[in-house]
Amino acid sequence: MAPHLPFLVLLALAAPVAGAFPDSWPVGTWFGQGQPHDRGEMWVARMLADGAFRVQFRTCRKGKASDQFETGSWTLKDGLETIDIATVNGRKLPRRDQYRILRHDGHTQVYRYLRTGFVFTSHRVADGYQMPRCDLVS
Image 1 (cartoon, rainbow, N blue to C red):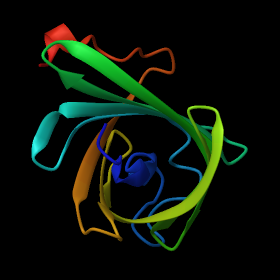
Image 2 (image 1 turned 90 degrees about the vertical axis):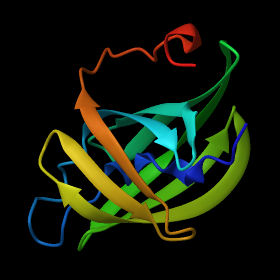
Image 3 (image 1 turned 30 degrees about the vertical axis):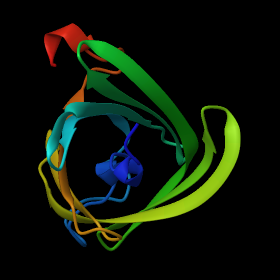
């Protein structure tokens, strides 16, 4: 499974253009698809109001899914989202990832993973949203 541009999602999921939105705008559920150069990657990030998050990453290869789950906390300040990952697939694997929010309109967000420079896009979805099956995307 690709190293999930850490958290991209997540990423990313939570950081508005400096001063343009309150720091709570990322709260909710966000879906994104396609790491750079790989459309078989997708994620659903659930950003909670208490600063916690849960994200599911899915890699699709030949119709088969490989999932990874991460938990941790997020903060947002001046357009910079910091994701502190606590667990990966239930194992303690602490890591800090940071994203710069490039654009956010309440429904779509575009953000840059600072470690690699990759740009990701995610869309707000219903809280009960489920990850699509791989046979529908690969």
